[in-house]
Length: 322
Image (cartoon, rainbow, N blue to C red):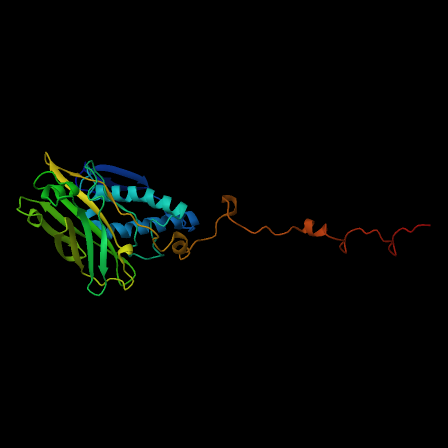
Protein backbone atom coordinates (compact mmCIF):
# COMPACT_ATOMS: atom_id res chain seq x y z
CA UNK A 1 0.00 0.00 0.00
CA UNK A 2 1.29 3.45 -0.89
CA UNK A 3 1.35 5.94 1.98
CA UNK A 4 1.34 9.72 2.02
CA UNK A 5 1.93 12.14 4.90
CA UNK A 6 -0.92 14.32 3.68
CA UNK A 7 -3.57 14.07 1.01
CA UNK A 8 -1.36 15.97 -1.43
CA UNK A 9 1.97 14.78 0.05
CA UNK A 10 4.71 12.67 -1.51
CA UNK A 11 4.01 8.97 -1.59
CA UNK A 12 6.10 6.08 -0.29
CA UNK A 13 5.58 2.37 -0.79
CA UNK A 14 3.77 0.26 -3.39
CA UNK A 15 0.38 -0.37 -4.89
CA UNK A 16 -0.61 -3.31 -7.07
CA UNK A 17 0.90 -1.68 -10.15
CA UNK A 18 3.31 1.05 -8.98
CA UNK A 19 6.15 1.67 -6.52
CA UNK A 20 6.60 5.16 -5.05
CA UNK A 21 9.71 6.75 -3.55
CA UNK A 22 11.17 10.22 -2.95
CA UNK A 23 14.55 11.35 -4.29
CA UNK A 24 15.88 14.82 -3.45
CA UNK A 25 12.36 15.93 -2.52
CA UNK A 26 10.83 14.75 -5.79
CA UNK A 27 8.29 12.02 -6.33
CA UNK A 28 9.60 8.94 -8.17
CA UNK A 29 7.04 6.49 -9.58
CA UNK A 30 7.99 3.15 -11.13
CA UNK A 31 6.02 0.26 -12.56
CA UNK A 32 6.02 -2.58 -10.09
CA UNK A 33 7.74 -5.73 -11.34
CA UNK A 34 6.97 -9.06 -9.74
CA UNK A 35 8.43 -12.47 -10.26
CA UNK A 36 11.59 -11.22 -11.95
CA UNK A 37 14.17 -13.84 -12.82
CA UNK A 38 17.76 -13.83 -11.65
CA UNK A 39 19.82 -15.71 -14.25
CA UNK A 40 23.10 -14.60 -12.66
CA UNK A 41 24.83 -13.94 -15.95
CA UNK A 42 28.52 -13.14 -16.03
CA UNK A 43 27.70 -9.49 -16.78
CA UNK A 44 25.40 -9.29 -13.74
CA UNK A 45 27.87 -11.00 -11.42
CA UNK A 46 30.71 -8.79 -12.68
CA UNK A 47 28.69 -5.67 -11.89
CA UNK A 48 27.82 -7.01 -8.44
CA UNK A 49 31.49 -7.71 -7.79
CA UNK A 50 32.42 -4.13 -8.69
CA UNK A 51 29.61 -2.55 -6.68
CA UNK A 52 30.28 -4.78 -3.68
CA UNK A 53 33.95 -3.81 -3.77
CA UNK A 54 33.25 -0.08 -4.00
CA UNK A 55 30.50 -0.27 -1.38
CA UNK A 56 32.85 -1.90 1.12
CA UNK A 57 35.46 0.77 0.41
CA UNK A 58 32.97 3.58 0.99
CA UNK A 59 31.86 2.02 4.28
CA UNK A 60 35.47 1.87 5.45
CA UNK A 61 36.21 5.48 4.41
CA UNK A 62 32.82 7.03 5.15
CA UNK A 63 34.20 9.19 7.99
CA UNK A 64 35.97 11.23 5.28
CA UNK A 65 34.22 10.46 2.02
CA UNK A 66 30.68 11.36 3.07
CA UNK A 67 31.64 15.06 2.93
CA UNK A 68 34.82 15.26 0.84
CA UNK A 69 33.41 16.20 -2.58
CA UNK A 70 33.26 19.93 -3.21
CA UNK A 71 29.85 21.20 -4.27
CA UNK A 72 28.08 18.06 -3.03
CA UNK A 73 26.09 18.04 0.19
CA UNK A 74 27.30 15.75 2.95
CA UNK A 75 25.75 12.30 3.01
CA UNK A 76 23.87 10.89 0.05
CA UNK A 77 25.21 13.25 -2.64
CA UNK A 78 28.82 12.65 -1.64
CA UNK A 79 28.22 8.91 -1.46
CA UNK A 80 26.81 8.91 -4.99
CA UNK A 81 29.77 10.95 -6.24
CA UNK A 82 32.19 8.51 -4.60
CA UNK A 83 30.41 5.50 -6.11
CA UNK A 84 30.11 7.05 -9.58
CA UNK A 85 33.70 8.33 -9.77
CA UNK A 86 35.25 5.10 -8.55
CA UNK A 87 33.00 2.80 -10.59
CA UNK A 88 34.57 4.30 -13.72
CA UNK A 89 38.05 3.74 -12.28
CA UNK A 90 37.45 0.16 -11.21
CA UNK A 91 35.83 -0.79 -14.52
CA UNK A 92 38.99 0.31 -16.33
CA UNK A 93 41.11 -1.62 -13.84
CA UNK A 94 39.00 -4.73 -14.44
CA UNK A 95 39.28 -4.48 -18.23
CA UNK A 96 43.05 -3.90 -18.28
CA UNK A 97 43.94 -6.01 -15.23
CA UNK A 98 46.33 -3.24 -14.16
CA UNK A 99 46.45 -4.00 -10.44
CA UNK A 100 45.09 -0.62 -9.34
CA UNK A 101 42.22 -2.21 -7.40
CA UNK A 102 41.64 -5.33 -5.37
CA UNK A 103 38.20 -6.97 -5.76
CA UNK A 104 35.88 -8.51 -3.21
CA UNK A 105 35.06 -12.20 -3.23
CA UNK A 106 31.43 -13.33 -3.30
CA UNK A 107 29.52 -12.18 -0.19
CA UNK A 108 32.65 -10.53 1.22
CA UNK A 109 32.28 -7.11 2.79
CA UNK A 110 35.86 -6.31 3.82
CA UNK A 111 37.86 -3.35 2.49
CA UNK A 112 40.33 -4.19 -0.27
CA UNK A 113 43.11 -1.82 -1.38
CA UNK A 114 42.42 0.33 -4.41
CA UNK A 115 43.31 3.59 -6.15
CA UNK A 116 40.16 5.26 -4.84
CA UNK A 117 39.30 8.88 -5.45
CA UNK A 118 38.49 10.10 -1.94
CA UNK A 119 37.89 13.79 -2.66
CA UNK A 120 37.30 16.21 -5.52
CA UNK A 121 37.57 19.97 -5.55
CA UNK A 122 39.10 23.16 -6.92
CA UNK A 123 42.08 23.55 -4.57
CA UNK A 124 45.58 22.47 -5.68
CA UNK A 125 46.70 18.99 -4.71
CA UNK A 126 48.38 18.77 -1.32
CA UNK A 127 51.60 17.08 -0.16
CA UNK A 128 52.45 15.81 -3.63
CA UNK A 129 55.76 14.31 -2.45
CA UNK A 130 54.42 12.67 0.71
CA UNK A 131 55.10 8.95 1.18
CA UNK A 132 54.97 6.13 3.70
CA UNK A 133 58.36 6.22 5.42
CA UNK A 134 58.25 3.02 7.48
CA UNK A 135 55.96 0.43 9.09
CA UNK A 136 56.56 -1.15 12.50
CA UNK A 137 54.33 -4.24 12.63
CA UNK A 138 55.06 -5.19 16.24
CA UNK A 139 54.21 -1.69 17.47
CA UNK A 140 51.26 -1.21 15.11
CA UNK A 141 52.75 2.03 13.82
CA UNK A 142 53.02 3.70 10.42
CA UNK A 143 55.34 6.66 9.85
CA UNK A 144 54.64 9.10 7.01
CA UNK A 145 57.08 11.63 5.58
CA UNK A 146 54.85 14.55 4.64
CA UNK A 147 56.93 17.54 3.58
CA UNK A 148 60.61 18.28 3.04
CA UNK A 149 61.49 21.97 2.93
CA UNK A 150 64.50 23.98 1.84
CA UNK A 151 64.79 26.18 4.93
CA UNK A 152 62.44 24.55 7.41
CA UNK A 153 60.14 27.54 7.77
CA UNK A 154 56.52 27.43 8.87
CA UNK A 155 55.46 29.02 5.62
CA UNK A 156 57.14 26.31 3.54
CA UNK A 157 55.40 23.55 5.44
CA UNK A 158 52.05 25.33 5.23
CA UNK A 159 52.49 25.82 1.48
CA UNK A 160 53.23 22.12 0.96
CA UNK A 161 50.00 21.34 2.80
CA UNK A 162 48.07 23.82 0.68
CA UNK A 163 47.32 25.96 3.73
CA UNK A 164 47.35 29.71 3.03
CA UNK A 165 45.21 31.07 5.84
CA UNK A 166 44.88 30.27 9.52
CA UNK A 167 42.07 27.75 9.81
CA UNK A 168 42.95 25.94 6.59
CA UNK A 169 43.36 22.20 7.08
CA UNK A 170 45.31 19.36 5.52
CA UNK A 171 44.00 15.85 6.17
CA UNK A 172 46.30 12.90 5.51
CA UNK A 173 44.44 9.62 4.94
CA UNK A 174 46.20 6.27 5.26
CA UNK A 175 45.23 2.82 3.97
CA UNK A 176 47.04 -0.08 5.65
CA UNK A 177 46.99 -3.92 5.67
CA UNK A 178 45.40 -5.50 8.74
CA UNK A 179 46.08 -8.84 10.36
CA UNK A 180 42.75 -10.27 9.12
CA UNK A 181 43.84 -9.88 5.46
CA UNK A 182 41.60 -6.85 4.93
CA UNK A 183 42.63 -3.20 4.83
CA UNK A 184 41.97 -0.46 7.36
CA UNK A 185 41.57 3.28 7.01
CA UNK A 186 42.23 6.35 9.13
CA UNK A 187 43.21 9.99 8.83
CA UNK A 188 45.23 12.71 10.57
CA UNK A 189 44.05 16.33 10.30
CA UNK A 190 46.48 19.26 10.56
CA UNK A 191 44.83 22.63 11.23
CA UNK A 192 46.97 25.67 10.47
CA UNK A 193 47.19 28.04 13.47
CA UNK A 194 49.49 30.80 14.63
CA UNK A 195 52.56 29.31 16.31
CA UNK A 196 56.22 30.02 17.04
CA UNK A 197 57.51 26.73 15.54
CA UNK A 198 56.39 24.32 12.85
CA UNK A 199 54.93 21.84 15.33
CA UNK A 200 53.18 24.62 17.27
CA UNK A 201 51.64 25.91 14.04
CA UNK A 202 49.48 22.84 13.41
CA UNK A 203 46.83 21.34 15.66
CA UNK A 204 46.46 17.59 15.19
CA UNK A 205 43.32 15.41 15.32
CA UNK A 206 42.68 11.81 14.22
CA UNK A 207 39.75 9.72 13.00
CA UNK A 208 39.05 6.16 11.87
CA UNK A 209 41.55 3.42 12.70
CA UNK A 210 44.20 5.85 13.95
CA UNK A 211 44.43 5.76 17.74
CA UNK A 212 47.07 8.48 18.08
CA UNK A 213 49.41 10.65 16.02
CA UNK A 214 52.81 12.10 16.91
CA UNK A 215 54.23 14.68 14.45
CA UNK A 216 57.94 15.48 14.37
CA UNK A 217 60.08 18.02 12.54
CA UNK A 218 63.78 17.37 11.98
CA UNK A 219 66.21 18.05 9.14
CA UNK A 220 63.62 20.41 7.65
CA UNK A 221 61.22 17.47 7.16
CA UNK A 222 57.77 17.04 8.69
CA UNK A 223 56.83 13.49 9.61
CA UNK A 224 53.96 11.96 11.56
CA UNK A 225 53.94 8.60 13.33
CA UNK A 226 50.49 7.10 13.74
CA UNK A 227 49.52 4.17 15.93
CA UNK A 228 46.75 2.03 14.48
CA UNK A 229 43.83 0.72 16.52
CA UNK A 230 44.11 -2.75 14.93
CA UNK A 231 46.98 -5.16 14.46
CA UNK A 232 48.91 -4.81 11.22
CA UNK A 233 49.46 -7.76 8.93
CA UNK A 234 52.74 -9.52 9.68
CA UNK A 235 53.72 -8.92 6.05
CA UNK A 236 52.93 -5.18 6.16
CA UNK A 237 55.61 -2.93 4.69
CA UNK A 238 55.91 0.66 3.55
CA UNK A 239 55.12 -0.57 0.03
CA UNK A 240 51.79 -2.12 1.07
CA UNK A 241 50.47 0.98 2.87
CA UNK A 242 49.24 4.08 1.04
CA UNK A 243 48.42 7.71 1.75
CA UNK A 244 46.53 10.59 0.15
CA UNK A 245 46.14 14.21 1.33
CA UNK A 246 43.18 16.60 1.18
CA UNK A 247 43.34 20.37 1.71
CA UNK A 248 40.18 22.05 3.06
CA UNK A 249 39.41 25.78 3.09
CA UNK A 250 36.21 27.57 4.03
CA UNK A 251 35.30 30.43 1.68
CA UNK A 252 32.08 32.45 2.02
CA UNK A 253 30.48 29.76 4.12
CA UNK A 254 31.31 26.88 1.74
CA UNK A 255 34.09 24.32 2.02
CA UNK A 256 36.56 23.95 -0.82
CA UNK A 257 38.58 20.75 -1.21
CA UNK A 258 41.55 19.51 -3.17
CA UNK A 259 41.31 16.35 -5.26
CA UNK A 260 42.94 13.31 -3.69
CA UNK A 261 43.39 9.74 -4.88
CA UNK A 262 45.31 6.76 -3.52
CA UNK A 263 48.05 5.37 -5.76
CA UNK A 264 47.82 1.60 -5.31
CA UNK A 265 49.79 -0.96 -7.31
CA UNK A 266 49.62 -4.77 -7.53
CA UNK A 267 46.38 -4.90 -5.55
CA UNK A 268 44.85 -8.27 -4.70
CA UNK A 269 42.65 -10.19 -5.23
CA UNK A 270 42.53 -9.74 -8.99
CA UNK A 271 39.18 -9.56 -10.74
CA UNK A 272 39.67 -13.05 -12.16
CA UNK A 273 40.29 -14.44 -8.68
CA UNK A 274 37.27 -12.65 -7.24
CA UNK A 275 34.75 -13.41 -10.00
CA UNK A 276 35.62 -17.13 -9.85
CA UNK A 277 33.85 -17.25 -6.46
CA UNK A 278 30.58 -15.78 -7.79
CA UNK A 279 27.72 -18.12 -8.79
CA UNK A 280 27.65 -17.34 -12.50
CA UNK A 281 24.71 -18.98 -14.26
CA UNK A 282 24.56 -20.44 -17.75
CA UNK A 283 24.82 -17.77 -20.42
CA UNK A 284 22.15 -18.01 -23.10
CA UNK A 285 23.30 -19.29 -26.50
CA UNK A 286 21.66 -16.52 -28.56
CA UNK A 287 23.33 -13.93 -26.34
CA UNK A 288 26.82 -15.12 -27.27
CA UNK A 289 27.62 -17.76 -24.70
CA UNK A 290 30.88 -19.69 -25.00
CA UNK A 291 30.00 -23.23 -26.03
CA UNK A 292 31.87 -26.19 -27.47
CA UNK A 293 30.99 -26.94 -31.06
CA UNK A 294 30.42 -30.67 -31.41
CA UNK A 295 31.18 -32.39 -34.68
CA UNK A 296 28.01 -32.92 -36.70
CA UNK A 297 26.91 -36.31 -37.95
CA UNK A 298 27.35 -35.18 -41.54
CA UNK A 299 30.96 -34.26 -40.93
CA UNK A 300 31.50 -37.63 -39.28
CA UNK A 301 29.97 -39.36 -42.30
CA UNK A 302 32.43 -37.72 -44.64
CA UNK A 303 35.29 -39.50 -42.94
CA UNK A 304 34.25 -42.93 -44.23
CA UNK A 305 31.40 -45.24 -45.27
CA UNK A 306 28.67 -46.28 -42.87
CA UNK A 307 26.45 -49.30 -42.82
CA UNK A 308 23.46 -47.37 -44.17
CA UNK A 309 25.20 -45.48 -46.94
CA UNK A 310 25.92 -46.59 -50.51
CA UNK A 311 29.12 -48.49 -51.29
CA UNK A 312 31.16 -49.17 -54.38
CA UNK A 313 31.12 -52.90 -53.67
CA UNK A 314 28.57 -55.26 -55.27
CA UNK A 315 26.09 -56.72 -52.81
CA UNK A 316 24.18 -59.98 -52.85
CA UNK A 317 20.93 -58.29 -53.89
CA UNK A 318 22.43 -55.50 -55.96
CA UNK A 319 23.30 -55.38 -59.62
CA UNK A 320 26.35 -57.22 -60.92
CA UNK A 321 28.55 -56.71 -63.89
CA UNK A 322 28.10 -59.15 -66.67
